[in-house]
Image (cartoon, rainbow, N blue to C red; front, top):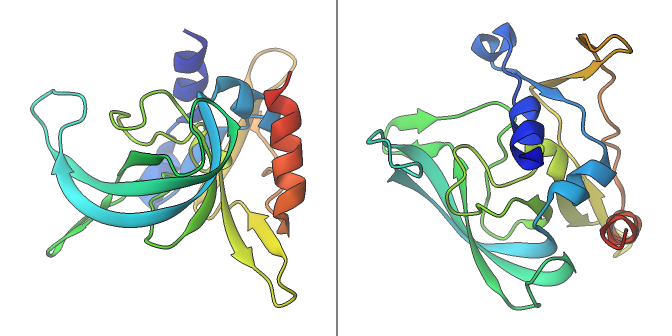
Amino acid sequence: MKRTIVWSAAILVSAALSAGALTLLVISEARIVQESERVVLGTVLTAQAQWLDPDGDGVQSIYTVATFRVDQNIKGPDQPGTLLTLHAFGGTIGNRTMTAPGVPLFQKDERLVLCLTKEIATAKFSAVVGAVQGRWVVRTDSNGVDQAQRDFEHVSFMSFDANGNLVAAKTPDSKEEPLADVLARLQAEAKK
């Protein structure tokens, strides 16, 4: 029940959706880790758009299907070398493109830290907890240090005020930072 509430609240689609934006409920890193079945660092080995009907309602949409190799496990059952199949709404097949702002897609050879739901292959939009809030892109800087960063382009945020009303919220921090720092925070939360 908690997962459904957090995920439903995280996908608060506003009128901005028609303008190519998504409004999400701000979720703390602690809550993202708590709601995640898996938290992993890894590499996208393959990514291909396919027509799928993940919820079996007879309506197919384009999803990007990725093979993701776990390189480091922070939370969950996966050991390094485990291959996960992940689905995310959106992609391009021929001249047909489907997208959903704030739903992170996968690209071949991308290194990522992902906080994932239990339904990694059947999620309606994305298996990433909190949409883009549970995904860090990893790159190696010119000094050979791995850096991680979240991408909040085309996303705005809401939170609840003291009276329980939704109000505009500050965008969570998306600065680039050392991957080791991100992993240390997520590991600390996973141990709680």
